[in-house]
View 1 (tube, rainbow, N blue to C red):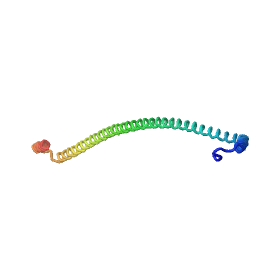
View 2 (cartoon, rainbow, N blue to C red):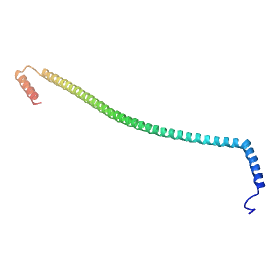
View 3 (cartoon, rainbow, N blue to C red):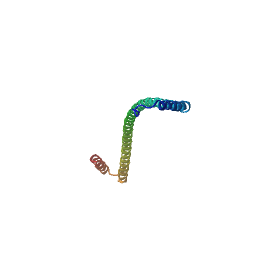
View 4 (cartoon, rainbow, N blue to C red):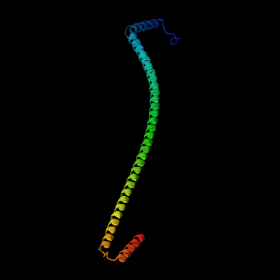
Length: 164
């Protein structure tokens, strides 16, 4: 039984040794250990708070990113609509310009045709005048002494004019 129950002297020495050890620990080591534990606990709490703040900020950033994406989509749609309208307007302007230019070209062609027509008529008038002068010259060259010859010549010339 000696092995199971320690002696009273050993228990007293162990209590004294433990008390000295506890006093030294309390005097020199307990405060730094508690301070280290408290600082560790506060740093863990700060880290948890920072993580919570970061999580909230991430949620805010995500919401902000979604809002920005939506705005960008709306702006893109507006830009595409404006571009489409601009293209339609440019096509319409090009059609109008082409029709105006076509009308001008037609008017210029009509004017050129009219000018050519008048020039041709003037040329015909000149040729008729030249022919009339030639006929008058031939008539004047004939001898007008014979009345019957003059009448036959005039009749022949009149017949030539009616045939042409």
